[in-house]
Image (cartoon, rainbow, N blue to C red; front, side, top):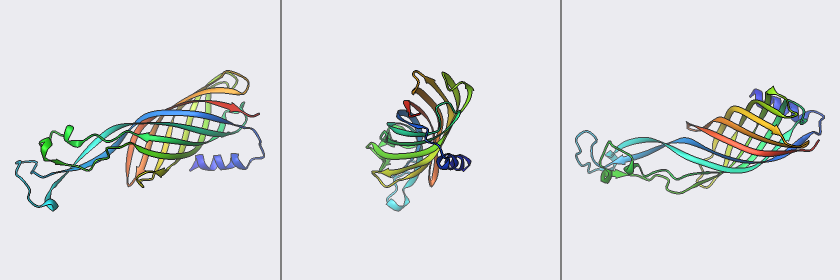
Amino acid sequence: MRSLALFGLLATAPAYAGGIGLIGNAGIHTEKVYFYSDHTVDGGLQIEDEANYEQLLQRQALFNGGGGVEFLLGDRDERIQGVFRLFYNADTPQADPASRTTLVAPENVISRHRDTVKHTGMATMGLNWGIVGSPDNFQAGLSVHVGSGFLTNDRTEFLIAQIGPTVNYRVARQVILFGDVQYAARFRKEFSQGTLVTAGVRYMFD
């Protein structure tokens, strides 16, 4: 909430400095995959009634990646800048639980896991805070972003929050290369955790 409040103050300030950037990202996150067994886990006895099938759970680590644009508010010489990102994200398919479980025989697994790529439109706002170094050349600091996966192909929108170190290097008066390594959390009824690496180039208008 503090990040959003500060971003709002920056947005209402009488300043015209800012920039635009191109970003690409890749990472890994966890997803819970539920499946069922038509045999008992303890004795391997067949269960006749589908309503009584035993529910099991796997936590799978899945890759994700994408890219998009970002808009910055703040002078290129300032240590704190507001950032708005709009980008596409793709999550790899979930693995068939039958290929990973050791609780029951693979032939006893009944699953409706997601076997296709999940496409998501994502938007975040946040702050870049330079702590070490100088905005004129190399600088390291902290980046914080919050937002949502607001557009999905399976109606599973979610909240997102990211925090981690950031570095940037000015290669020209108005051109900056940067990279973030962030802890990334998603929330839709339950938390999913992961790591996201983002890199890109920024063009500052001032």
